[in-house]
Structures are given as C-alpha cells and as structure tokens.
Amino acid sequence: MNVKFDFAKTVYVKPIDVADLPAELRDQAGDLDHLFAVHNADGEQLALVATNALAVHLALENDLQPVSLH
Image 1 (cartoon, one colour):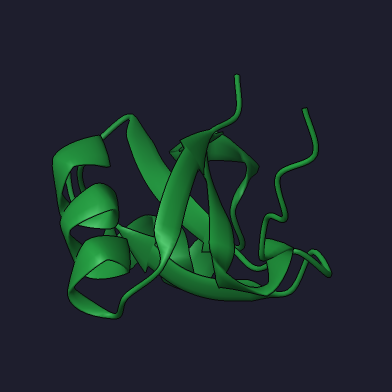
Image 2: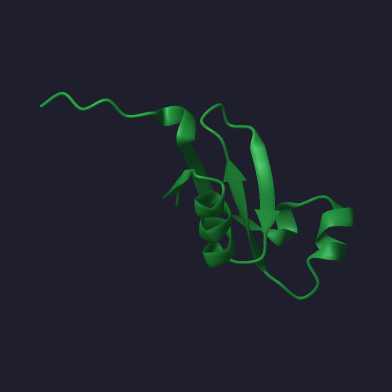
C-alpha cells in the first residue's frame, strides 16, 4: 500500500523538564514541573506550552498533525 504522507504538516510534541530549561524560562514556568515543546519536522522548536492538551490544540488549530514523542 502506497500512501503519500505530508511530513511538512507534522509536528512533534515532547515533554520537557522545567529543571532542564534556562533560568529565565524556569521562572516563567511557575510551579510547573514539565512543559511541552512543539517541534517541526526539521527539529525547530515552534512553541513551549503548559500542557500536552494545549500543544495538541495549538497544532490542530494551525492545520498541523501532532505526534507525541516520549
């Protein structure tokens, strides 16, 4: 089965430990332990948000297909 898939419209959602972020971002994260990064197919970070649900919603609202990375 040959199905064409447009990877340009795929984004990857990855949990990030707040402790691994620069001090400025840690301060902005408040009391959260994890944030969720949204990356394009080239690995460029597009967004950093508070919840996985928000990351998925952001992707879908921009006609992108989110894929979870663990």
